Amino acid sequence: MKRGNNITVCQSTKQRKTAARNQAAPSALNAQPAVAAPRTSQPLSAAQLIAEMEQQRRTPCQEAPGDLDGRLSSGAQSGQSTGRASGPAASQVIKLGVDVHLHRYVVVRQIDGGAPQPPQRFSPAQFLQWAQKQTQLAAKVYSCYEAGPFGYGLHRKLTALGIANYVVRPRDWDEYGKRVKTDKRDARQLALHLDRYVGGNGDAFCVVRVPTEAEEQSRSRSRQRESLRNEKQRLAAQGRSQALYYGCRLQGEWWLEGAWKELTVPPIVQELLAPLRRLIQAIEQELKVQTQAIEQAAPPQLPVGLGKLTYEVLEREVCDWHRFGNRRQVASYTGMCPREDTSDQRRFQGAINKHGNRRMRSVLVEAAWRLIQFQPTYRPVAKWRALLAHPKATKSKRKQIAVAIGRQFSVDWWRVRTQRCRAADLGLQLNPAAAPPSHPPKRATGSRTAPPCTHRTGEG
Image (cartoon, rainbow, N blue to C red; front, side, top):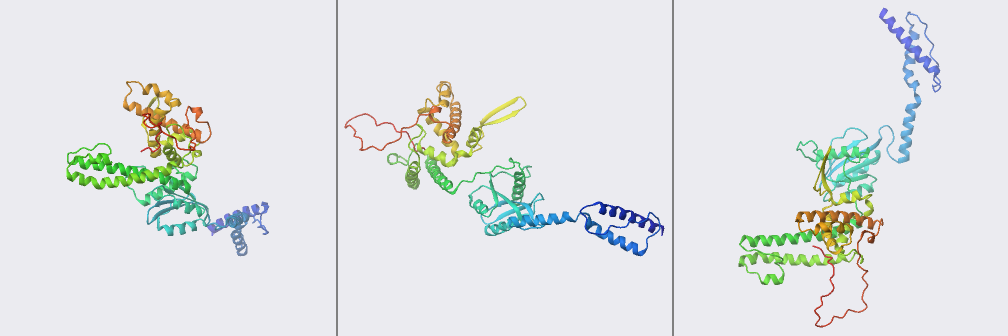
C-alpha cells in the first residue's frame, strides 16, 4: 500500500505541472484546467484517480495541437500546388541510378537522404512507365546513366517526363579495387554519386553535354566519314600483311590502277588482293562523296592552311563554342594538356594526358603542321619557328611543338568563334572570299607554268 501511495503522489505531481503549463499556454484548447491536488501523501479517491487519468490521456494532444495540423496542411497545400502526392508519405527528392543495356535497365532508387533501395530490373518500356510514376511521388526526380552506344534517346524521353536527367562519362566504379563489376553495383554507385552531385558536389561525376538533334546528326556524318577512312586503312594494311606472308612487300597505295598493273607477285597473292582492292575502291568513292558534302557546308573565308574539312570537323565535334567559359576548358577538352605530378617542391610534367575528344586531337595536330607551313606570322608558329628550324631538333621535339601549336590554336579559334578577338589580331591570314568567275579562265597553250597552288581541304 505504501508503494501505491508513492506512485499516486508522483502522478499527482506530474499532473499539477501539466495543468500549470496548460493554463499558461495561450494556444491551448478550450479545456478546463486541472485542479491541483493537495500536497498530501494520502491516496486519491477513485473518482479523482479516473479524472486525472483522463486528463493525462488528453494532455499530449493539448500540448501542441497546431504543429501536426500545420504540417499536414502544408503538405496538402504543396501537393495541391504541384499536382503530386500529398501527406506525410510524399517525398521531396527521388534519385535514380540507371545502368542501361539493350534489353533491360537495372535501376537503384534513393528517396531523399535515405539509403539506396535494392536494384530493380525493367524492360525499356516498363522503365519509362515506372519513371513516370516516380514524378507523382516526389517534388523532384533526378536520374543519371552512362554515355554509350545507345545515344541520347533515353535522355530526351526522361526529360520529356519532367525528370532532370544527367548523361555522365563512363568510368570504373570499383574505387577500392575489389574486382567485382555487376550491373547492380554500377547502378548503386550511379545513385550514390548522383546524390552527391545533387547535393552540390560537382566533382561526383563528369556530366556529358547532350547535343541537339541537329548537332548530333551533323556530327554523325563526319564521324561516319572517319570510320570509312579507318576501314580503308585497315584493308590496305591487311593486303600488305597477306603479301608479306608470301615474301612480297607492297608499298604505297598498291590498289591504284597504275600500281596494280606493275605488281609482280605470285598468283595466290594477286588472288587474295583482288577482293580487298575492290572494297578499297568502293570506300574511296564513298569517301569522296562524303568529303565533298562536308566541305560544302564550310564558309569560303578561312585561315590559310586550315582547310574546309578541318573546319567542319572541329565545328561538329565542339557543337557550340560558347559552351566553354575559359581557355583552360578548351584545352582540357582537346586532351592535349601535359600530365603533371606535383608534390611539395617537386614538379614533373610528362606527355599529354589524352583526356578529351580524341577526334579533335588528331585534327588539331594535322592542322598544326599546315599552319607551320602556311602561317609564318601566326604567333605560336613565330614563337617556335627558330626551334623547329634548328638542325639539332629531334623528331620527337618537333612533334611536341606541333602539339603545343595545335593546343594553342584551339584556344585561339575559340576566341575567334566567340568574337573575343579577330583572326588578324592573332596573326592569322585568311583566304580571300571566293567569288565565282564570270567566265572560265583561259590557259595559254604550251605554257609550262604550273597552276596556282590550292590548299588541301580533304585531309586523310
